[in-house]
Length: 429
Ligand SMILES: NC(=O)c1ccc[n+]([C@@H]2O[C@H](COP(=O)([O-])OP(=O)(O)OC[C@H]3O[C@@H](n4cnc5c(N)ncnc54)[C@H](O)[C@@H]3O)[C@@H](O)[C@H]2O)c1
Image 1 (spheres, rainbow, N blue to C red):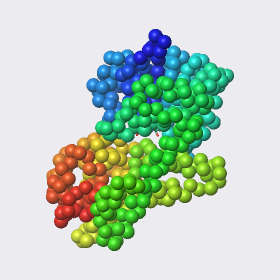
Image 2 (image 1 turned 45 degrees about the vertical axis):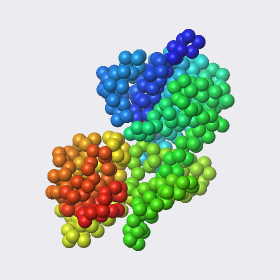
Image 3 (image 1 turned 120 degrees about the horizontal axis):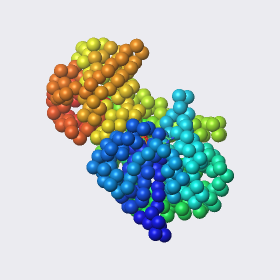
Image 4 (image 1 turned 90 degrees about the vertical axis):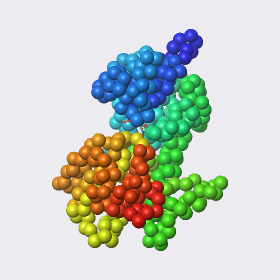
């Protein structure tokens, strides 16, 4: 796509789950795109047409390369760019606070190369105030003025890995600039390849919008993960109750219990917000702290229920053959970051269980607990493995699984997702 007859040059910094799809979508509509990443192995693989992201096939990447997309680890390309988008990771630091190292690193690199007239957008999820207080000063370190020489905005990424309905083009994009001119520049840019662009009042509101979305999910998942415990004690099928509640056509949104939360967003982003509230205002964001406590305890509750199910069959956890089925953080994707399978596996190892697992998307899995290390490979035939186990725990119902066949092959199957039909061998969480 050309602006004033000139091809727009875009640099997308960070070529992971968020940055690569964004870069390829922009290339699709005719922008000249460089995907900048500090990992040489990622850059080489991308330029050879090998995708490391579930949502992007090798064919889609190769089509992008043919359209002019390329990957690089040379930040000199920033000096040529009209627009720079930053999609680098924002993990938690060891103390549980925000680790903005990658955001600061990217901003510093931009500051060293950026030329006047560039639009710079931060997309990494972070606490409100980051764009203005941390990002912009590094980007403008050479003396550029925000809103005049360089436009700076925040636009939260809303990618939902594995979602076949909502992708970059049809998911509305929120933009908030440091000045009204920055907001307008970001709006005009994204409107070229995203159907709906929503203007926030400013960067803080755009930053906050993302944290509201993820905190909402975190809190509501915690609500049902707490309810599932007492519903079990009260002999109430919570999944059935939620199915009934969901028939109300207004004022209700269904969340269902599970083995815990995972991924790069839900377990991490609300902590950014609670950390900010504590650091700035000195008090706790109690809803988030409670949700964290409940959702972090969810995998350990699964271990307790496993112990109970084995106990009813007069089998000790120590020495029991336990098969975990689906160890990613959600179905049908290979991302294992923060997967609840890890704390569950560590607890089972510490109790002396003999662990095995099946996951078509995870060929190998290393679990360490205290002095114990289990270097596991996914079992070949999941249905045979169910028959050989003392108990099977269904964690992620990947689409390839025939759930009834899994249940029928298992002596007992602990169904943490409420997806198996009622049969003698199935125990719902
Ligand atoms: N994965 C998701 O589903 C998702 C959804 C919404 C928002 N987000 C947010 O988007 C951001 C990126 O997440 P992701 O999942 O794409 O991460 P990712 O780990 O998949 O990819 C990040 C990439 O950035 C590269 N990188 C790190 N520091 C860099 C630097 N200074 N310069 C250049 N490249 C650098 C890494 O090598 C990596 O390839 C995070 O803030 C995350 O919270 C992620």
